[in-house]
Length: 361
Ligand code: PMP
Image 1: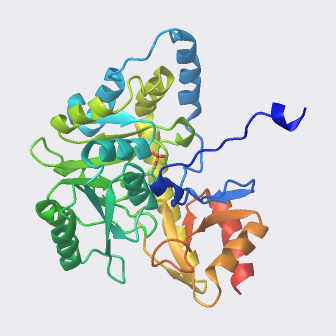
Image 2: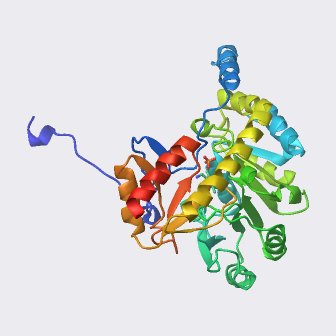
């Protein structure tokens, strides 16, 4: 083929702001012990997967799904004792957060976050053209109310994000703090409770049609369904109606709607697993405290640590060399040298502890 016949090679540039962005960095590598993305260590109960296999055969695959996901919303509403019109579901809680930003954020609007916190809050905000105002947490990662007031006054955010338990610190915001931020925030308050089941209290009890507050939850952690990509929020019904206008039609496929509904029939088993993970968190935390590590108390299914005498990134690499993958938090604001460890099975945690012992001492 001569040069004149060659198809022209063309590339186009993304939006200027996207060109400057970093993608999402959490390596997916093949390891024996995977403790980096806060998934449940066990698959869902066998009875659940068997029922789903039956349901699969009954689906009208040639038909679009129920656009309103009515049965799923009703089941989630029942779980939390709210009305179905207060529930909005999407493909993972990240898509819920994206829909919130598309609806209430956008050009000329701002979201407020308090670092360190879940990186996707500001990332999703920016992707939707929303500006980000970042406040700083105290040294112990609690919220400083005067800093909250400063950020809210300076940026008048359309959306304020809290994350409780906070990823990656594990800190649970108190009810007093959530109420204080809710009173002061001029726009919507989002409390991201991806790890809410592991915490002693939930902001779900504050949700009301007369308050601009939503609480987001996910099936990816407690429900052992990270592969299924399903999350939801509970909030005022007027807000759910706004989100329904923005999200793409038929965004939740029929299979996922069924999976989400059927999973809730196994809430007793899930509660038992949460209790077991909370107990294992206690055991792991105590063992980590015996190593030369700074360990932050956690209300989630992970623990944040910082090696006292070794370089965090090197420790992360040396664990990986031993086929143990944890989360390297070095690029997170204020978390130089920190590592986040997901609570695994006791066997997995023992492998991690032995590897850490070897690396650190
Ligand atoms: N919020 C927080 C705080 C998270 O840690 C995660 C998962 N890493 C998510 C939301 C997103 O969860 P998913 O999209 O899997 O529901």
